[in-house]
Image (cartoon, rainbow, N blue to C red; front, top):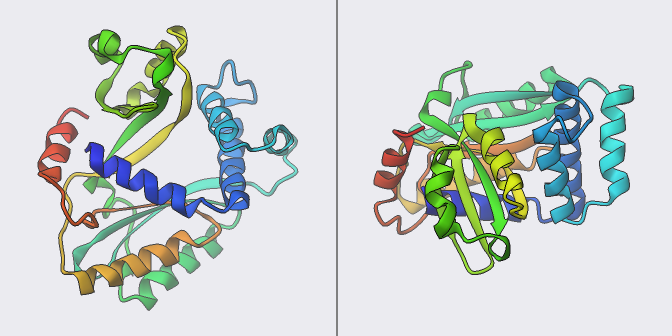
Length: 254
């Protein structure tokens, strides 16, 4: 699962490479979080994480405060998060996460993208079961010795650690996001970035020509201004080194 997560992360960073797009997407996430759990970072753990994420990409403090105030003062149209599910050609499942102030517009747009590329937007629940939701925390290696605390973090929902030179990524079960976050904060571990992701139970491999058609559809959907994330079960990696088996084993623990 580690390589699958890292690949998805690199695609997300590339997609959010334009600073204004990154700020807009995070601003929407902040507004949703405030709406659901209140404007106080101390009591709203997800908001606390989003603010840290915003700081990690140098989002100005004014932008963060503006997003919080928009939700408090309801000066922004009523945003809500929706998930749309469908199939691309060749049986590839696609799950679209969007934040919108106009549900009809967003659904119509996503449906048109599927139709144009010979896919089909499905009903709720048609592909969601093919994915497992995880929590992740990117942390600074300078603030913690992971070897010493790895076993202890299992009690708080740890599933896997992806280690690199400067930063490591802690992957945990979705339900244990709060407990993992609080434990890392308690140990004064520097959390650089955190959030949620959806990992497919299995990846589907197809030839390069067909793969390019699916990637085209994914890119079209990702470029929609309402879309936050696009999850799929297409094997994009050329070499996966038993990745499907790793994903399967990890998914059994979710």
